[in-house]
Image 1 (tube, rainbow, N blue to C red):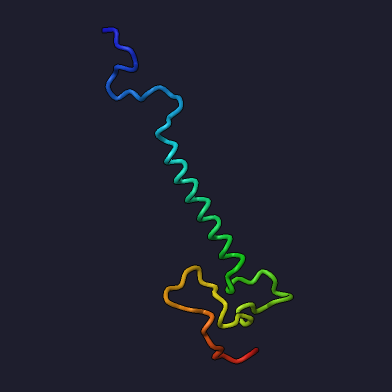
Image 2: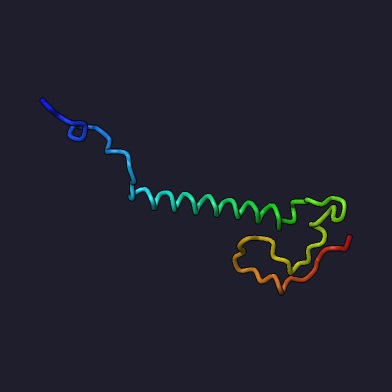
Length: 88
């Protein structure tokens, strides 16, 4: 019985380019890049994160009511909010 490796049941295809994997790598890669960019946005622009404690020790106190620091807000117009807290 002269059966070669390609005709054996359960044998894997020959190693080489697999064009069917290109969408998988694109989707996984774009998801990883998007997650990295979102983490960078959180680290740089979130008022809860303080990188410079010498010049601005409490950055959350310098926010005005019209500052939008959430990524996405539903039905909130930040330009119409009034200041309802004391100055520190």
